[in-house]
Image 1: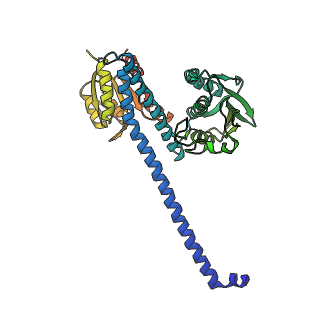
Image 2: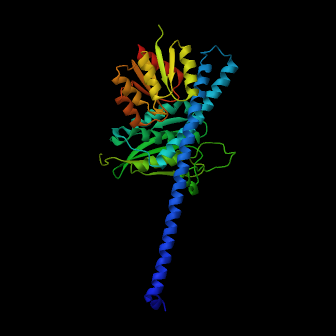
Image 3: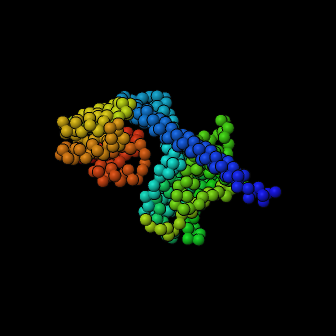
Length: 268
Length: 120
């Protein structure tokens, strides 16, 4: 029965036509979805850029007041204006994160590679974060890495990855905790570990944390706010270097984030 | 005589904020919102320091540099100001002759230091 149906040219042609129609329909749906996605990305990019400009003006005006350029402020006024600067900068960081994500998601990111030392870069990001850590009495240590060979990669992009991982480690670690950075070589790759003694991440959430807009606690009352894009960007930037990023963690037992960067990539 | 600073920036809000800062710091401040306007103002009267936004309604900010170089009217120093920390954009600014590339909003202390350094 099946054989005869397969061999019947009329039936075959009919099925072929139906399949072609289906393929055409699917292609249209894909095109439509792709164009919606591009539109959304473009919108996100435009709106973020447009939000940035007035915010820049607000921050500058507030800094002028804070620094007493237009007359001395009393202590309470000073604190209040500092609050405007601080809040504005936090908002700016979030907008920049969205812009970075949009650029990386729409393949607008190009790598500008050079030879540099990963541990030295880690030290730079560490010292940049030290005052934030000190507020929570958290120590940040680099455990090793002096003998790690140089990598050929995009320094700014890897700095962004370090900034994100170290920033998260501080954010999710309680007062008095520890953050560390360690280096090793695995199968021709440099492997970076950023560990902390923080709250940890349940195994079921290990994949989720690298997804866009995902936060393990996504409720409006969650204690830590953000765009939920930081680790998605970090993953994208590491993958652009043909590296890998992952987490090893258990709830209540701290987290270790790892990423790899090839030590001898093709030179372009 | 006060040094002359030209702000090339298409957002009135940002221009107003920078104007308050720079006038208070004792500079003579002028502003332009387009490539054409910037070229005209810088050609008409010599500029000591130009603060140059890269995205302008009628073109790229670096076109201002090119036109002024051709007209022999380049400011003593140009500080590019960009909203995005992009190493490629940074390189093209330096290649075009900018003294520094600053990320907007530039903290006011840093901006004043940069301008002073260019005038020293």
